[in-house]
Amino acid sequence: KKDPDGSFEYIEQPSEIYVVTANAVYPIVLAPQKIGGRTIRLSAGELNKIKENKQLFAQIPYEKQLIKIIKDVYKNKIPDSWNVVHPQNPSPIVVKDGITATLIAYVDVVGSGFYLNEYKISSSASMRISETDFLNAKFVKDPRAIALSGYDVSSQDPVYLFIVARGGANE
Image 1 (cartoon, rainbow, N blue to C red):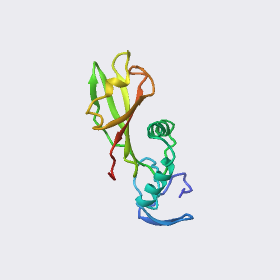
Image 2 (cartoon, rainbow, N blue to C red):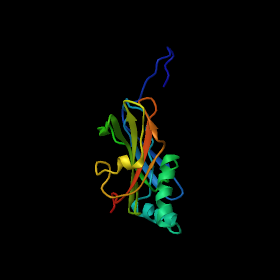
Image 3 (tube, one colour):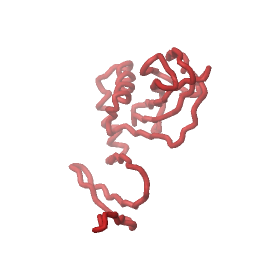
Image 4 (cartoon, one colour):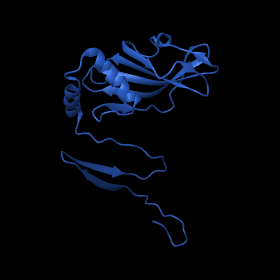
């Protein structure tokens, strides 16, 4: 609350709230901390995610499934049925000639057999890159599709790498 002198008084004890949706009630315990804002996705469970993803990909050919996964992540239109993890302080991977790749997101397309790793690619000098520069076991073990957001990279203009691979948390 805001005090008359203009200062703020913050709650320090945990609070409990309930989020009610058409399909479920989610009890949430809020423990105040001095941290940045976060997005929390509520889910009715992994089984529902698997069903949603099976319906999402049911009529789509294999190659178009891979393209859809990359496009949805690139456009930041990730369905709620996909699990997204943003690693804290990931270690950069040295690719070659001053090029580094830093993992910024891991996306598990639950129940589909696919996951996507998104990397930020930067370089100490301006240079041209291609997808073949990243066909390496350092990134994923079983790649199925790879795409870059651009081909000219530098320290001021990073490029984003998307690799869809076979596997996932539920495989």
